Length: 289
View 1 (cartoon, rainbow, N blue to C red):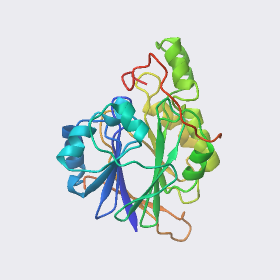
View 2 (view 1 turned 60 degrees about the vertical axis):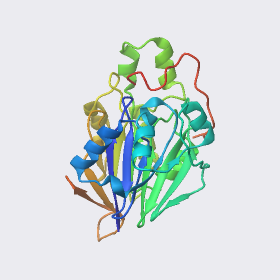
View 3 (view 1 turned 90 degrees about the horizontal axis):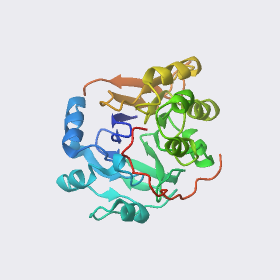
View 4 (view 1 turned 120 degrees about the vertical axis):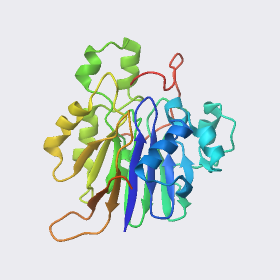
């Protein structure tokens, strides 16, 4: 009993995450081109014909830039809220969803929930199937009760660790952008992500993929060095902004002396979240945070 997961890309230059079983899969966001999505899935041994739907977290361009072509070419239903579709300015037919109301896609159950981010109607997702729960938690202004609730159920998760506080403070960004990133509706720092992991990690968690790392205000080495002393048996990896990850098979079976979830790797095959608006003058998804 397992699910297969991979990041096709993670960062302000594009986001796309794959979660599936042996029969069907979903994509969370489509922020890289259709051609690049196809190339990366082919390199991983993943079949686009198994993808049954695309779920969109919010309208920033690094989450939707490849959506019109990808959804049209493969005739994929797009699950997107009305406010997100309106603010995306895309001409496509979407299927609306509502926070906390599960959507069933074959053997996969996708549960959206609200998060803090400077977008019209931003959501995170928990994908369930075969007794396994996978979280896709990025673009988070602050940790909230809903994030804690859903993270505490995950066998594996993509969790934003966008910036190192010192690197952001000393970096080249203008003050308005620094304040946007750390202001409660932007992104999580490495230390905020670590706090989520330490406080809300369930016994069944076996894999954590650090996601949406900043190009200028973070590095994989910085994030991994912070998390390593606290891993306690959980594999910690980084979802790159430059290439796809390997495919991870996350299993739900247990054995003596191990956690409720074991991990196999297949290569080559806390306030309630509220709605937020994008501040004037912010160019969505075009900056290197």
